Length: 331
Image (cartoon, rainbow, N blue to C red; front, side, top):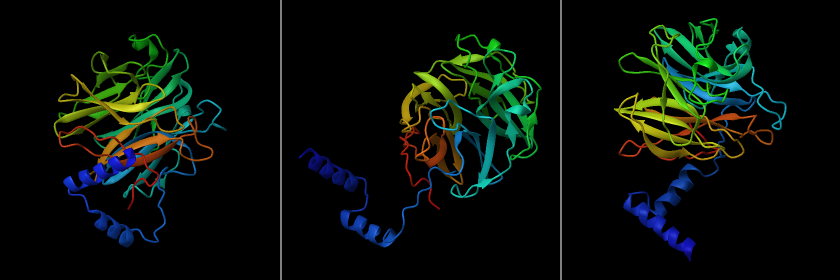
């Protein structure tokens, strides 16, 4: 009886929202989907394990940047030595490029090609990356630069931009990870990063030096993976929430806050402990890019794969829950 009640309620709500009637739905299904094979577009890269996605829209093209999971089995820990880049003009078909950046390109690092993001400014492309520092205990953030979104990239500083001895809000050695960068409407660039604590700082115009003190943001159950995007007058700060990780978000009228927590937008990613997102708008459509352990039977927490689904906004500018699908984006 309870299932029948909810089914009738669903039909009533559909009528109230001007959704198609049952006969119309049947007609649509029979005319549009009959004899059509199911298109499985997630994960979007199926011959490599890809993780920690970031995306850049440049010259009407989406450039996707990801870490390369290379663990021999999913029972091993992270094995990541390089970052990858792909491009698309339809969000379905992706072109692969030669490896643009490796941990070995940072002589001061000792390993671990963890989460990273690329941004363009004045015709140059800056790639902020997470690595392990060779001489200072803990994780660190470096920056590479290139003249093309596909590289090749080279170390822009010859040293870390952020190292563990610069951040004291927590005692852990892995709080300097997952950099994300955002250039505000006035041209001021900001770097956000962190684990258990969300840090941010201004960047100088050269994009490779801090311009002021390192600040912190109070967010409920902040784990890692901050991402900043803006739509209209609203700034959105999404991040990995708890562990295993969901994705939550906060909103503000200013990039420096105050931030108002709004809730969860993406649930646990199945058989993957982490949840790392990128949010972009391309040709007028918002997209939510994330990773799961979706390549089966071999995927998992240390052999991840990038997926893409649509992102929707409510009338009050808050975000709807993301629906993770196998179909993904359709042409």
